[in-house]
Image (cartoon, rainbow, N blue to C red):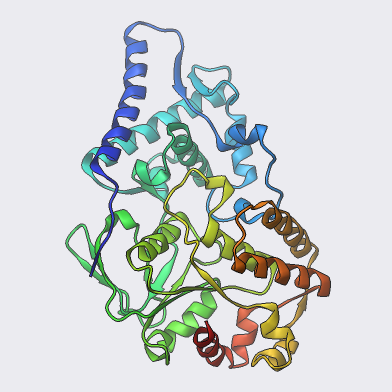
Amino acid sequence: MSQAPHAAAHQAGAVIAKIEDILGSVVDDLSRGATELSIPFRTRTAAAASHPRPPAGDPTEQGEGPSSASQAQSDSMTGRSRGVVTFPGRTVHEAKKFGAILRILELSLEALVAGKIITKRNIYYQNTELFREQRVVDALVDDLAFTLGIGRNALNIVAAAKGQTAGPLILFMENGTAVSCSSSHDNGVLIPHPQLIRRIDFSSIRWILVIEKEATFRTLTATQYWSRSVHGEGLLTQGKGFPDLTTRFFLNLIHAARPDIPMYGLVDYDPVGMSILRTYKHGSRRLDHEEDCTVPGMTWLGIRASDILIPTSPLSRTAEDALLPLTARDRRVGTNLLKTIFERRDHDDDEWEQLVDLQTMLFLNVKAEIQAVDNMGDLTDWLEEKMGNL
């Protein structure tokens, strides 16, 4: 049984102090009869202006976080170069943004003092007229964390649960309850935020498989592959495509507690699949101020070029029927991903293999989805062989 690491009490106290300083400054300005109120506020977009922008399709542009459209909408509500939002501001939009930020700070402070977690979705539904859209809350929360120099986790604000996990894992929660991850037949259990976890019982887990596709996760969970593998019991996890921060925090926590348990990534053989794998391993540039949300030690299980192109591979014959041509978007994502990999200075063997596979993919103009191979009935046997060879 392993104890889950928690944010130190002094960190929560430091965040509370920062928020109280901001709110106290607003109150002081009001008491002095100031004609303009201000709140410090910076965005990741503005801060990155002096650095090359990651190309579209870069894995760091994917994953959790507001889209460029929502970020642009958030930016348009105020001039960001000043690093503050003011009231009454230069526009009605800026005045509304001031109120929205103030409300988020208030809710975050309440959550921190009470030792509770709130979701961005809950914040939105408490103030739908103020925020107008969920994506506005998403952008403001992440930018507030960036402004304060902390991760969103430290604000006690999280996204609604998205990822799922299944296997002989027991999570003992802060509220005294226990969550058995083997209790659901084919859906798994929703991954809770690590701050809500007191400790973890890993039982007899021998491996962890992180899956890109929900359909593949459901198939393997329904057959209880996690309990039937020849390699012993394991844990199945999926983030429904690009993972949210909670899923990434959870896997980081698992790996930190038990680094001896191998963790494998199973993604489509296409540029997006590789981007998802890299988000798990290296994080995202958009949220690079977030800490403890990567698993550099995750091993790329597949699907790789060798699995579908080498004649001796167990998947090669069936995979021929599953090959699809790359779309224009695939090629754009792949080309930009090549640039990202080349820009990294600390390449490991796994990353060089990604680079070669990506070049092969673009040269041959082919891709393959996990589900297409799974539909042919060979995925389980392939998983057993792949894990046995690593």
